[in-house]
Length: 287
Image (cartoon, rainbow, N blue to C red; front, side):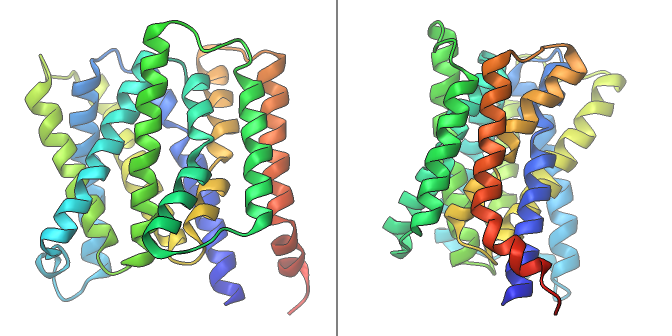
């Protein structure tokens, strides 16, 4: 049990850092959101199909047989991916992180309503502290209507992500298939809605790792971690993205964070370390 929990924490930490690169890719691609969504889904779906084929020696077709219930759960996955790309296009990475900070609460609420799981008090306290940190990061205000629309889409993304994480723990056998089909659906919609889905070779060179990393590897790690630790805790630990995402954009594009962002990021990291403190002590003990 201890080893399973430790593995889950490491997986989610790694996934959070990988997922935080989404802002870098989105900023670097001068494409409309539908086009980015479409091509990102192509390569993300390809990664997940390969991942599932490796996990299911009996055949990929059998693994994808999830029934009508699974198909219904694929819709929040498609919603999640679309909302995230549009949120990053409409507003700043820092604005999106303010809403992303509500993920532990949204996940805990979905988990409670769906499975009856009640989050531990330590998790709730750490989530509140992290939320205060992210609020500090965007203390400049909510901004204009476009930015508000971006933040509203980020909230919808959280709802989809919460369903993904809870389903990964509740239905471990079908969670990857549900996510893969949802991602493929988002790609179909992206190609249908894009004004000009064509891309250059240089843009394709960015879209390939964008899909492989943020849709494929990061989400595969998230769902594997969610099978080992409670979904609400996955939401909290994944908030490493809240601190690392703006930092990466600063380093790559010169969007230097101000004092509130630095202080807020420190609060997020401190809340995460405090929550993980008991586990870190256990892991440090000799076997």
